[in-house]
Length: 211
Picture 1 (cartoon, rainbow, N blue to C red):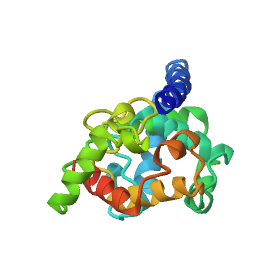
Picture 2 (cartoon, rainbow, N blue to C red):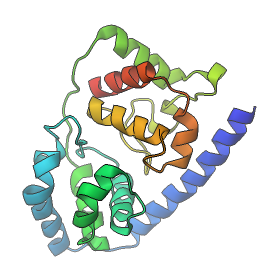
Picture 3 (tube, rainbow, N blue to C red):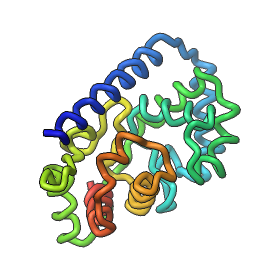
């Protein structure tokens, strides 16, 4: 019961934030010049790490293609304000995001959200099966809720809950570990995943990468 109460309190807080993020986007007009500027930025700068149209060729750099626009907006604003302060944010994203205004952030998020990610990567069948079970059912005996409750049955994401399907496995593993160690601030996620073992993180990442 404590798990359920804490889980739902956290979900209400995040859903309120998701609603405000969505309202923020809808309340800002992005003109064609901003859209073109965002496309140039994606093509000539962001693609260096995140690949053509957001399909990363490097296992530790995330795919952006097909990602939830509200999540991308929230992360870019967090980089710009330096409220996301993990190592990668500090080393790579702070300086890039500092140059972005609100309309470019929204246009850039929209650019990536509309791109197709493509097929997932195959992996060990037993790891994929174990990751799928954990994603869909969690382990309530250890107060670990199912990831699908927030990220969707197909891991497609919802608003500021990011798409995980098809994401780079090594990137996912690193981010989950950094959140566990509180090297990346994510209070709700920390509480939900703090008891995952290294093996469970691996099978989750393997399953999600395969989608």
